[in-house]
Length: 268
Ligand code: UVW
Image (cartoon, rainbow, N blue to C red; front, side, top):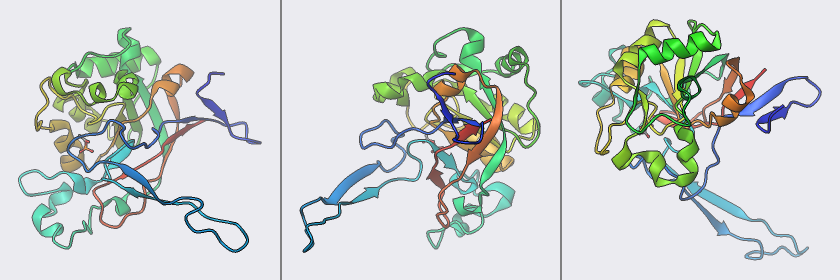
């Protein structure tokens, strides 16, 4: 048993938590409103006659912060979202009726970890490294797993170990490793339901930052309706040595939103 495994009392099941803790100041994409947690009412601010009091807090946040899922409404290409939905007309009311995060069913599916960093024998892939189709196939072969239609595939680059360092996790000068367009096409050809990674944007970000083109987002979200999960903590899963498991993930049911923070669990 590793530190990462939690026992489900009375069931014989074990769980690995794949979600990151939400904290003000944590690394996050500059493309999204910052996560902000405040405490408008502290104990002692309003004390009842019996001496009791309540502390009440508040969060203000973009929906693509911490470990999160991208809804199909998140990205459009040349004016259209998945299924040809008109991207501009659709958001007029401030809500994405057809493709918002409320349309994502709770995910309880076969999960597959592709531990690319483990396969390559590195602590983490270098910033800006493109994880190739060969990498994905060789990793799957080495682990003895076959990606099947309907799976949720999680790709570990090892870059998640930088989350604690703050800014380096987001990339900037170094870039961030991840799949490119070819890797996304490979995932789509396998018919996966969702794909995730231990990085801020799931796909490779080139060194130098800037407003990157995100071809894997286009392929997955727009062309194939495949959800993307980002900023996962995959270290515990690699430590546990699990290649296959049941993945449980439930987005917040926010009507019309483009994404949602999530706390996915791997169970077996
Ligand atoms: C990033 O945060 C860069 O990714 P997304 O916008 O896809 O959530």
